[in-house]
Image (tube, rainbow, N blue to C red; front, side, top):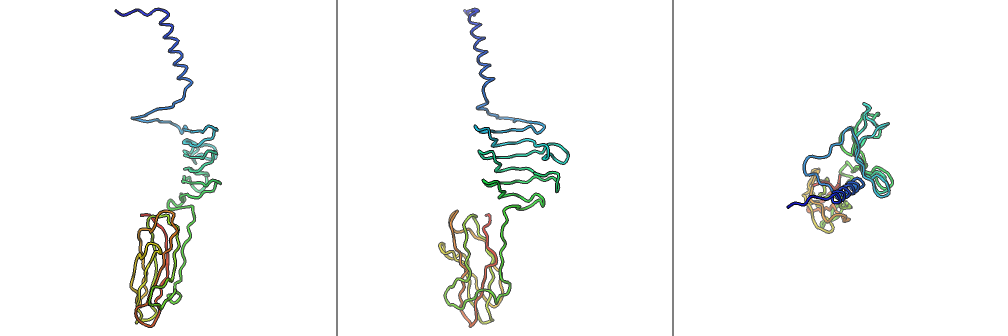
Length: 246
């Protein structure tokens, strides 16, 4: 039959429960699983993750003061920092009272320079980095020319492979009606990428293809020409070349 607990047994259990409660109150949340629902933090209260040195490496929450929204309420921001506490990725507007309140995404380098950001003012495209635009000669008589009957490189595209696709625009023509030939794009390691016939008409070619090589390769793509008939020159020039997404 069941045994009635003695007073000593009850006291021991109470002491055990008190010790357990003290342990829980001093402890930290080390392992938690939320299988349904979630955590809701209202009124822009924040979630902050700090490292052993006390540096904040992640923050989601509200920012007031000069960073308040134009209506005076805290601005919701998100930031990811390195172990120095320096921002490396963030979504925020550092001057919400100027130029209209619009948050942008920014990525900083180690020295604190923004190296990537979207143009929130216009609502589209990049703010950083600045990307150079290409320049080419407009008059066909100024383009590189060849009378060679074998392939001759007239323009060279040198690139550091970063993207999966390569986009190239180039133009070609001949000097006079009886002159014909060919132009081609050739990767010096992978071989011929594209070949086009050339006649006495100005053609603007636009082509996209898989980028030769593997990520990080330094590649050279030659725009080559040859004359097959006639007394004149075969002319061609690169108008634009860039890596693009697939």
